[in-house]
Length: 128
Image 1 (tube, rainbow, N blue to C red):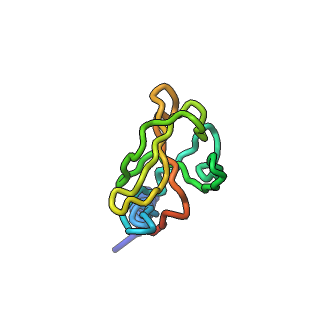
Image 2 (image 1 turned 90 degrees about the horizontal axis):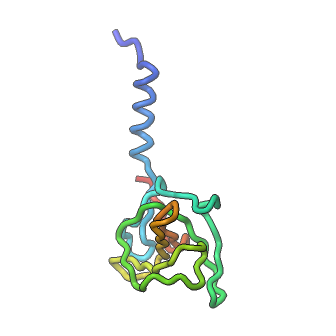
């Protein structure tokens, strides 16, 4: 005779289902996996969703993440014109198709010491 699940068993099952339906981020141009929405992070107390203007006047809506994959550095660290004071930035491209997907900021003396800003419109979000 089945009496049902305990509360702990229900929580464990719910947790497993949520993990299976995790939202992942992919390059919109080639489909390479880039990150996972669980890595969204706040920097300097701001929202993980931000809009910035570069020196050329181009607007970028970015999301900040603590971990990414499938990206390659394509510039040296640059401190000038940084959107996050004290953090030098590096340009990042998709390792597969070489599309510019965003930037990485790193400063070992700050918290967080490293984070990514990816261009929202160049990503595709899918549930896995």
